[in-house]
Image (tube, rainbow, N blue to C red; front, top):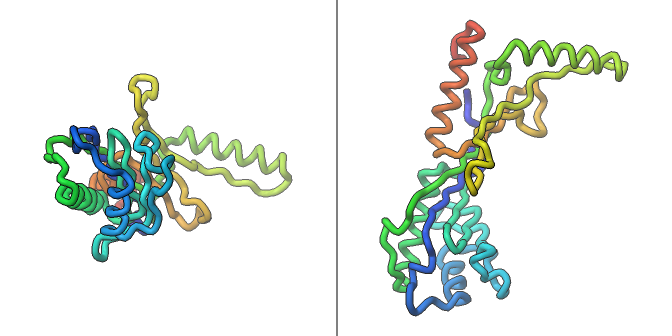
Length: 227
């Protein structure tokens, strides 16, 4: 397996933002302008509607030194950052924003105020393994569908397994968590063996599970991992 790109890393820090300034509050327009200036965000909230944390105050395309930030969003109960680096660096960038803001605006911040972190990792990768061929029953359906469609359309049609996805029952918790999925990379032919995967995990754990999964698929097909 070869990782071709980190498509997106998202880190969510769950915190009651009202507790950061429990009595005096802060001037939202000033706070937003200073954040945008310090971290060089090219787009940031400016209207009263955009300054509403219940709807999410969104900052786009910023940086800390040479490290880029795709998106930073302030909600009333969660802070969200998205980058093209791994989740470890994304978390570090988020912490830098929080610490700078706490010092600049005299916020009553302590790390334990963040009740938990959550992650989304999006990757694209290449694999020579038949990574979506998890069942001979799927393959049988694909063959029969291909044959039927070839007859219907009067041209060669070849179906293959397209996606693998696992997730939780969305009715058993209030907020849905992203599934773990592997699918063909859009705008690439199947023969290119390029895939996209999303997981609600750190980047390192995501990669490790993909490698473990690839090794298992190769073992099922009586092959060894291709370097």
